[in-house]
Length: 274
Length: 133
Ligand SMILES: Nc1ncnc2c1ncn2[C@@H]1O[C@H](COP(=O)(O)OP(=O)(O)OP(=O)(O)O)[C@@H](O)[C@H]1O
Ligand SMILES: [Mg+2]
Image (cartoon, rainbow over all chains, first blue to last red; front, side):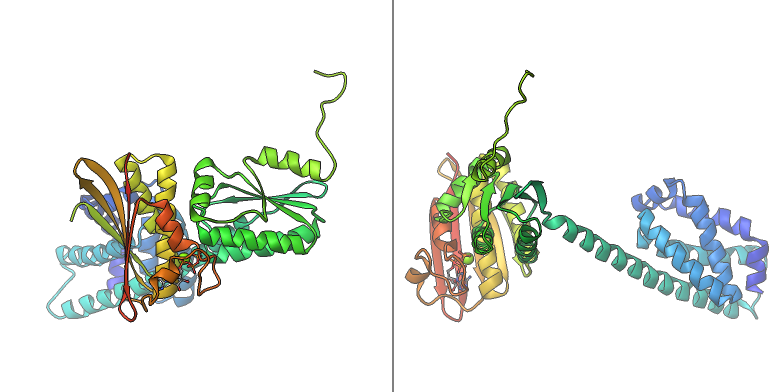
């Protein structure tokens, strides 16, 4: 009966619902409503509710999953979706009341049904939403890991590892692994580590750099530390860290030139051109 | 207290938050890039020591105004195992974790004032201050 009512009065319920959401002067809510996808998605949400109530479990589940996934990607706050469903259940009930659909006999039953459906839907959405988020976070972790310690061969025998951002224990381990594997794979004679983009060089980072340099030596290559900003050079000195075992250069450019020289090459301008 | 803000150190990423807080306050007080680097590095050392040796604790950054001078104080507090021989840990190269052993003596050199108070079994309290010149 409730299902019947919702199906026939879908448009009226929808309009009243959207009106109600707009009246909430919450900023996150109004941002969502301004979203161009709002009408499409809220329509979909009502249809999902109808599917849920009509009991077509299979269709409902796949569509809900798909819906949650897209909503997460759009960046709609979970708070908004949960609240919107709450409001939807209120609106349906109130519409039924004003259309004289509710009688003393069926009142309890209608309320119970509505509550039951909406609650179940909210918990399913939260569930899908979290799964979606977890997937996103783990994908980003992988993406970050791929970015964390890239090794780039720039000349025969010369490889550069540009580091950008904070170095934690995990990343330090990754740097070491990539450095050694890459140096062997590219047959590097000189490996340059560029720390221009590393905000803080403390004893932990310095220690890892020294260990990496020692390891690179062991496989028969040389390790050069480049991109040491003036303030970083000063703090390294104050910390009393001995970087004697590592060749250092101010800039990547100076480092590349030195590396070419160490491998008995240099860059010369072409003759006959100026 | 308006002049003091704190960061709890529980996991490794809290070290980054503590550094960020210190850098922001240092900038606000007018420290130049070299001093900013000194201050953030000192915070990094103290916060990492908390994480490594005490498990958890907190780093507070206090703005100092004393007889016309402006400064920044790093306060590192934990209820960890404490340090029995303070003279020893202040020596360059002393480390119980296979580190460089440069952290604490380094902080002392990076900052203008340094004070350490620790009792075995009770925890460690370190304060280090940098004055604006
Ligand atoms: N908050 C603390 N609680 C207990 N022990 C500490 C604490 N901070 C430092 N220590 C002890 O003091 C020693 C020296 O600390 P310091 O920071 O100078 O060197 P490290 O941490 O061993 O190495 P590095 O800082 O150079 O990576 C540590 O090895 C540890 O035993
Ligand atoms: Mg240390």
